Length: 196
Image (spheres, rainbow, N blue to C red):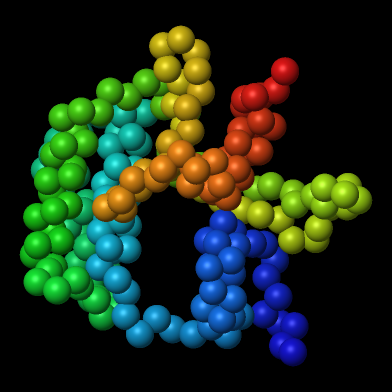
C-alpha cells in the first residue's frame, strides 16, 4: 500500500464518491487518475458557480453586476474548461447549447435574486471529525466550502448551496444529505446557528 497518498483532509465530495463507488474513489483520489472526459453538466455547474460568485462579491463591495458581466464570467469559465479536457455532452448538445442554457439561467437568476446582507461568498471551513462513541478526534479533518452565507432582514443566517441539477431534491434526500449535515455542524460553531 502506498502511504504517500493518504490525504491530510477529506471533503464531502470524497466521502460521497466513496459511498457511491469505492472503486471510483480509488481511481480518483488514491491513484489520482486523470479524467478522460468531463460531463458537460459539471462544466455548466462550475461556470454558473463562478458567475454567481462574481455577483455576490460585487454585491458585498457595493458594485452593480450586469447580465453581460455574468455572461462574460460564464463564457470564460465554460471555454476554459472545454479547452482543458474533453467534454462529454448529452445527445444533441454542444458547447453553444450549454452556453445558451447558462445564459438563460443567469438571466433568470439576475431577475429574481433578492440578496440580504452577504456574510460570506465561497467560504471555506474545516471540521474536526469526532467518533461519536469514543469522543476521539480523527487526524484527518473534513473540509468544505459554502457557496453563500447571508443574513435576512429578520436576522436569520442562511447558508446557500447552488445546484444546477435538472432534478430537484426531495425531502428525504435533503434530510440524508451529508453536505448539508457538514454545513449545519460548522454553522453551529461558527455562527451559533442551532445552539440552544
